[in-house]
Image: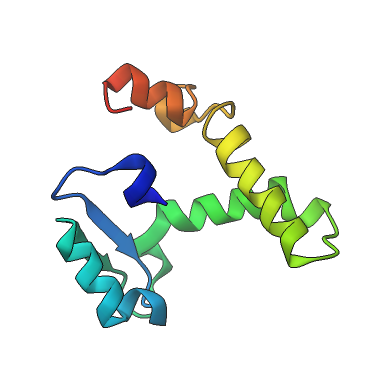
Length: 111
C-alpha cells in the first residue's frame, strides 16, 4: 500500500524488526527494486524500533484494549479506520508540534 499510495522517494530507509516477512528474499528484493533501503532491528532490542513500538502501544491503548472484536474483518476495519482516518489525519502529536502527521507532511511539503 505504501509503495502504491505514498510513492516514497528512492533512498527511504524502511526499518523493521527481524520478522520472517521482512527477512524474506522476495520482500527485500522488492524494497531494493523500488530504491528503498532495508534496515532491521537487532534481535531482541525494542529500542532499535522505538517509533514503531510507541505507535503499537498507542494503537493498543487507544483502540484495541477498549473493544471486543468478533471477527478478524471487524478488527481489520477498525484498525484501518483508526490509522487512516483518526491517527494520520486528526490525532495531534507532540513530537510534530501538535500537528497531525498529514498536517505535518503538508507543512513540510512532503505530502
